[in-house]
Amino acid sequence: MLLIDDLLMLPVKGFLGIFKKIHEMVEQELSDETYLREKLMALRLRFELDEISEEEYSQQERELLERLDAARGVDEGEKEEVFKDG
Image 1 (cartoon, rainbow, N blue to C red):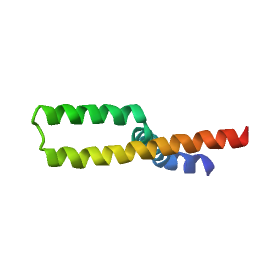
Image 2 (image 1 turned 30 degrees about the horizontal axis):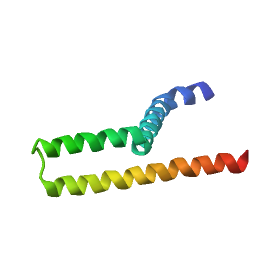
Image 3 (image 1 turned 180 degrees about the horizontal axis):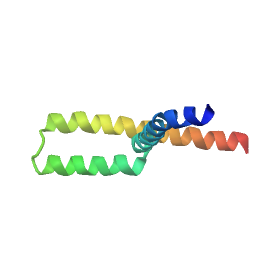
C-alpha cells in the first residue's frame, strides 16, 4: 500500500519541489544587492534615454532603493547572528 501511495503522491511532491525552488530564487533575487544595483543602473539608463518619465524614474528608483536598504538590513542581521553565535 505504501508503494501505491508514494506513486500517487509523486506528481504532488514534484510540484512542491519546483515551487520551493522558485520561492528560493525569488527570495534570493529580492535580497541580492548586486541584482538591485544592476536594476538601478538600467533604470537610470532608461531615464537618460528618455524611455521613461522623471515621475516614473523617481517612483521606481525609490522602490529599488527601499529594496536595497532592506537587503542590506537582512545581510547585516545575518552577520550579527553569526557574531552572536560564534
